[in-house]
Amino acid sequence: MAASNVRMNRSQERSAKGLTKSSTATAAPRARAKSAKGNSSPADMDDRIKHLECYIASASAANRTHRAMMADYVPAEETRHTRAKSTRRPMHTMQLARRRSAALFMQVIILVTMIAATVGLLNQKFHFWN
Image (tube, rainbow, N blue to C red; front, side, top):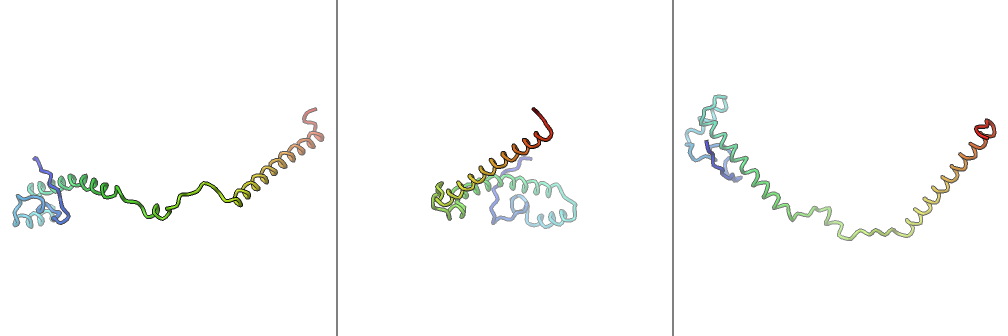
């Protein structure tokens, strides 16, 4: 069975009746009633298959149009920050960072000195090495 690809519009009915021109108006309610009961006829199955094929064929076109519509879209968050961000920091924050790094350096020196003094005192008491 060779089904033709028919583009679906949103205004069209999304049933097999709306997509196929070969089905008659009187056969569609009977086919729907049979499909609701679970007794599907081959014609009803063909209509369903055509409907699914058309839906799948229209999915890629819808994706392309969505991508084309969103190509020039700029999110609102980027439009708020129009000024260029400066990499320079104010003088008081640079001085504060310099003080913090100097204090950290002094703490490291004091810690190393205390560890060396403790090891020296333990060496005098227990004679780890000469």
